[in-house]
Image (tube, rainbow, N blue to C red; front, side):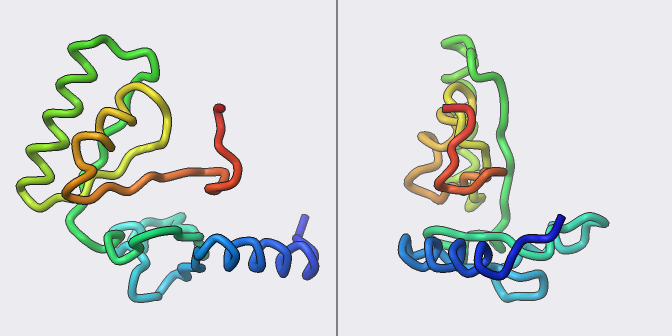
Length: 123
């Protein structure tokens, strides 16, 4: 079912209020590797430093209930990759995702959310 124009306009207003932007397939900041996939999303919403989307990126994802060793490895791996000029992409969940973001916070990190920045799932 298609969205109504009023719902679309409301979403765009909310995005603008938080300083976000639309990133459309073909835009400068649309990630080139994602654009090359068969089912690339035609539109995404970005918040923050969207220029990072087209940098060399390495994804680190894993368990929410990770072991202490797993958290340390993810953090160290993200730190070393950041030092090698990679941006780390991960979900925004606790556990391995959080450790990856913490390890790459100084070099660049991208949180990927399916539901949007205003709908954090799971809480």
